[in-house]
Image (cartoon, rainbow, N blue to C red):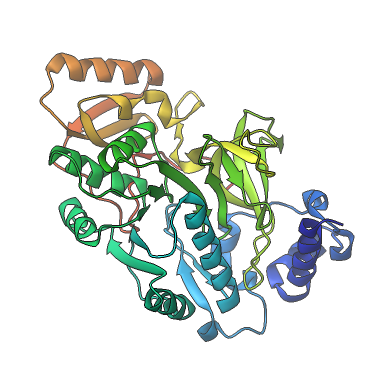
Length: 408
């Protein structure tokens, strides 16, 4: 029995014995926990989703725990309702260690200065102690900069801190990078920029890489599943952290083939306080090859395509990926947010980087309308700036929730 199978078996037995939601799910479907002996056997367990969690968050908690002794995280609420996710101190420590190892993989070393452009919050108890020890030993220096600050202030703080690594939401960092380029370049020169939490578009990646003269690595993570996959240093693929999570890519009612996209289903092997077993996270990904060309012995994802809710459901039944519009590759568009106001109306709020002619605007509108087809109106509205949402994330696309979404 492999180490992954042993961990799956331990998690399933724990969930059935201690977690009301899974005890009920197993009993209602005639599933015997002791019959699940490894990752391949997980297929007999029905898929859970965010609506199950939102309906009764307490039922996902292991019994007998004091919430005051746990670490609390709150999801961003991108599906409309934030939910609290709890970890034990030991589980949170494992999360932190995983992120520090990932930073080492990307090139940071003892003495590194790391800047996180994110929602600022009080330091977690264990995280605070660990960081104080590392900082005192001069092995690690970290600063957190609120992603809700104006881009100019974020850039000022980055320049003052001079980080070895920058981490945060790609939409916010791309706005800061564009401002740096407008100022004639940035003296901030990190070893790398790590992004996550939202879709990294090709335009965002190019702007960030150019402004900071550094590689940009995308990390795919969530509070429910932890760090699930991270971008290879030498290839475009994402390595799945198979010792931490069991993943499936599901297209319709079956597993997706290599090169096909589908919704990601994950089982967090490190979560016992609040287990997530065969959990539909709500993201669309493209399945990659079983092995990366770099030689790493882990399955891969080819792309992180975006949240299922970010797709645009059209009146004729099509489910259209927003990248079909290529709006982010238009040279004179600095920033944009494409919102589906109604099923038959899409509006693009655009911040222009330069003066544009009526002909250029008409060409973009014509291109988008040709993709949308008849029956859907499209308008562009020019604005001075676009702020991130209250969660700190910048969403370039926001489609209407649909019956085939992650909350199905």
